[in-house]
Figure (cartoon, rainbow, N blue to C red):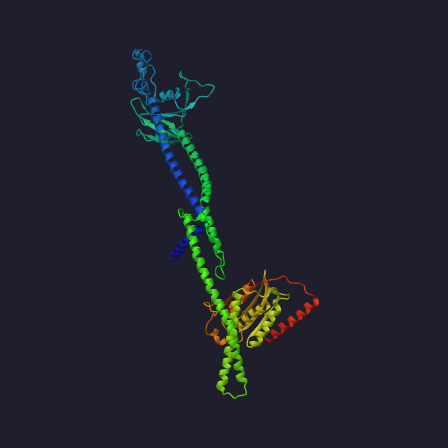
Length: 580
């Protein structure tokens, strides 16, 4: 069972590895088209080369077979003429019928001779084969072997070219050959060839591959063989030429295909470039001007690329219209919020003022009336905070300029933590500050509001006894302000939405804490307006809000002023830590 599980796991791992390998391969359209075209050409060339090679090989072997048959006929001689088995000498020659009868008794009846001759003129098959091998016109490296009545190979010869010093020729100028006898191993290999009258291919030790035919007849039995070197050499040369030409053709096709496909896909790349530029536009916020379009030359409906370009232009028109409508709607909402916030400030101030005057008046009021007046004042105050936050967000959304100045974050953090300690004495407050100034270009009032909101968020949404740490440190080109607490953490489903307006968590994050639900949205808006960002990381037992601001190079201040500022910072830091 365990082995089966392991095998299954290995198969799954193998499939995943193959899937990863396929995903890592190049996926560009040009690459796939070129690879497909080159692969198709390679397959066609391989098929053509294979068919050509097989056909030529068959043709060459047929030619070689004809040569073997021709050699067998030449060995046997004409039907009525002297062949290797014809023992009748020419008339008038010794051993003929007109010669002395005393030589008839000397006819040999040994195995391997054919018929009976006269006067010792009877020739064996082996002798006739030797004569055949030597006479002009025999192909070099031809092999012939005599077979006796018992089926054994008695003699076997191979035709070799004579040396240049002793070379002779026939009357027609053809070179004579030397008949070199084969060894026992080679004769045994010949004897093992089937004697069915057909042609067979056999490898002779030291000689190579031969095409062999066994011939039987009343003139004797023998083998005739011709080497296949010519066929093998021709086929190998053809294969080499085919491979070389195919390789060169594939390289040329790959280069030409890459160029041609690149030219053909150039309009598609321009369409993709337009889509890429659109994807890089900040379409999610603010006023968006979507002027990117595919050129008219790339929108021909008669081509595939033109159809894609025209469809992309239509889509961009729809997106532009939708973004314009969204922008107009946001502008109306933003203007309404700004106007409403501005208009509500005065009546809210009046409500709070009259409620306070009534509560402080000389006329006696009952406890219910005093409670109602207190509730009116508190709710009016909370609504005033909400209106102020909405007005600030509307101004930030509208891109109102901030008052940027060189600001040191260290004293700003010290002051806001001191204020937070005064408001939340049931929490433990800690500071982690650098020794050198932490300078940024910022609107100090807005940054102070960011810190106040983050510390208030930590104070109001964590139980008493929670430790809150404010930290300033440099991280590359950024100065980072961390507000960390060891509270219960932010729920995972709320974490992606904490910077949204009016984001609410569980009952512990209800309106009973006095928050408006806009504090973290203001933090994000102010950080973005300063060219920075705010992030949050939260797990049970730890939550860290980090404000990233572009850092400035510190300026060298007079020694006396710096010492006094350092002493003041040290005093404030010590006071906060001791108070915790």
